[in-house]
Length: 200
Length: 90
Ligand SMILES: [Zn+2]
Image (cartoon, rainbow over all chains, first blue to last red):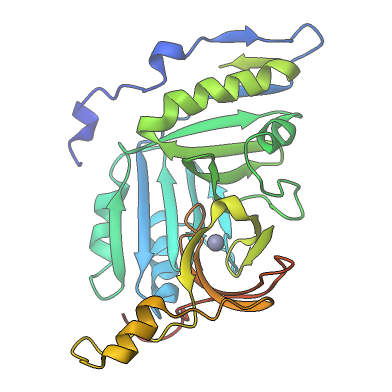
C-alpha cells in the first residue's frame, strides 16, 4: 500500500462519467456530482472498551478530534473521519499512506486497521437539491438537525451498502463498494435529472 | 415498520435482518438432554402480542439487537444491543 503512488489508479466510474451539465438544467443546476478520489480510506475497529484509545489514535495520527456520540464526525484540511458503528470509524485522507500511519499507532490491544483505499469509491453530491435527491435513495432523515455537519450514517440503497458523510451544509460524500460504484452512479444520475445536474 | 437502532436511530425494517426467536435457550454443546434440544430447535411460544426477537441491523451499523415486537401491531417497544459495547474484550 505504501507503493500505491506508483500505480495509476483507475476509476470504476470512467466508462459512464460524462463531465458537463445534464438533465433538466435549463432553469439552473440543482446538484453537482463529482468523484473526490481520496488517496486513503481506512476503517478502524476498536475492541469493546478500547473506543477512547481509538479516538485518541485518530487525533494523534490524522489530527481530527471526533465529537462524542453515535455517527459523530469531522472534516478538516483534506481529511475526514466519522463513526459508522459502535467502536468503528472511517478515516479519509486526500493523500496516500494513512493505513500505514494508523498501523503504527493502533496496537493489536486497541483494535484493527483495514485499508479500503482501493475497495471503496467516494461519490460527492453538492447543491441546494442534494437532500432532495438523496431522499429518493436512502430512507434516512437527511435534514441538518438529524444529520449534522461532519456526521456519518450507515445505510443501504436496496442491496448497495453506503456510508454517507455530510461534508458541507449541502454536500454529502457517499462511500460505496467499488464493485457497485458504477451502478450506483448511474442510478444517482437518473435521480438527479429532474433537478438538473453538472458532473465536474 | 420502524426499528430504532440504539446506534443509528429509527430505520426502516428493510435495513434489518430477522435472526430468530429471542426466547430460545441453547443447551450446552455436550448436552445429551434430548428434550432440551427438541425444545431449542422446535418449540416456539408464537404469542399474539409482545415477542422477544433477535434482529441484525445488517443494512446499517451491523450490530445485533434484542427487540420486543408486538406480533399483532408490529409496534416495537424495545430495541437494545445484544452485546453491551462498554464491557470486556470479546
Ligand atoms: Zn444500526
